[in-house]
Image (cartoon, rainbow, N blue to C red; front, side, top):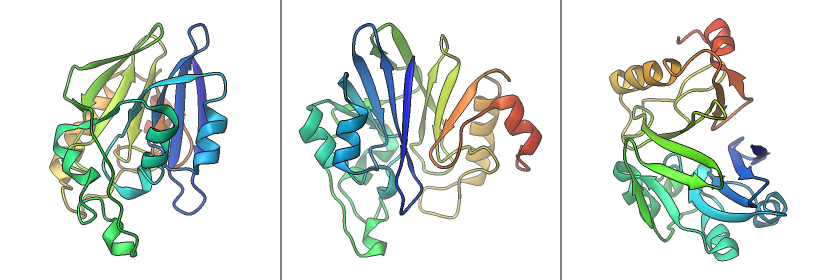
Length: 204
């Protein structure tokens, strides 16, 4: 699998491209960086989907432009879908830059599968940071994209609208039960293997 990461310099949010070199198909996850950086990431690939791990503005800052560039369908967890259009829910209202975006084209629930070339990504419902947070699991590549649920050395906030500490704890157990050899691609910060995270993360 081809993996590319680009980081928004203002908010530190990660944007990922996950692609199949053989077919040239790719998923874009959390388009938070500039349209120019999105276009650079896509060089040599055609996007077959844009996945939002959750609806907070810092993970979809360039969603509208990414839709225009790629024409790809937008996917998000059911409970977080209203946040695409509502600046109060996606929190952009509180930074004085209201953000409202089109979509989604597909609502993701537990067990849904997204195909990207030969890779299959399963949707894992991981609420707690938001009520509709989704993680993406690729069993064959042993990676899980966790959004703001789990970071290398911390976990997502639960004091924002839709946050729930009890749900977050359940979601963390779901993610870590995938196996110590799975690689976590978080919404902020560096990637790490689950066994490494267990060593350094005080919340696990």
